Length: 360
Ligand code: G6P
Image (cartoon, rainbow, N blue to C red; front, side, top):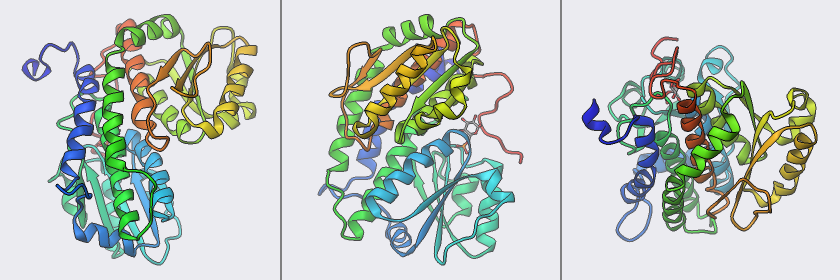
């Protein structure tokens, strides 16, 4: 309703702006008074007992799962596979001896994810659901639930649920690491506080994002997103956001794959967004940008403070290198929003899409 939207023209913009609050809310909900993480004992035990985690999700939630894999593997040392729910359904991989399933679903009602949940429960496996709607089908039918605490998400294009999913996955990974006696080397909650402030700064940069969207994407029919490492996963999400609401054909590619196909698509003025938040691959991604510029592309390089170079289109406030997806996605959400506006699209209810896909 209009009341809930307040002074905002669209739910999507309101939900983007709520993101600093979402992160702070998650910090509060998942922290004990003594500063330790707060997670149910049975979830902690399931994480300690498993030898391999299978993350199953669709759409934006799948993209959050790709980021979550990095957290769980790097912090907690547990191998993780991330699967698209529908594909998992037809093509179940060989499972390990002690699998744990993690379903990620904003709505908790996605039919393809539920079909996998039903199947793995029949096989006798344990499942944890991360959802924004405790009490939803996927929450009720799983053994355990972790709430996202993002508040109702109305816009079809998911924004705040994505960062909530990533934040909760980071907490899950850090908690498991601690339970296993592993040192992750940084204070997650403190770093997430820094993330919340960084997101706030980005939400205050709307004019700049609008400018980028208007100048850069205004009239183009396609756009590419390039990243390496975790930036690649955020590029997949950035491209999904843009195509969902602006109908620009947008694709995310791993920088290293550029030469294996995507570069053939570069023409004069083709918009190419590149992310450079990871020190270890910064030079390589900058190399990719040079390669597309040499073919006439119009680049928009988004880097992180401390790694910026002259000519970068936008510089993100610095955050811990593992948590960069929580901030690098914000400009991509905003650029998509303004590109859709610029094109006169129905931002909150894009054609052909549903908020929750409850048929297989
Ligand atoms: C639909 C929505 C997406 C969402 C996906 C998965 O396609 O439009 O925004 O990412 O479903 O939904 P879920 O509720 O399972 O996260």
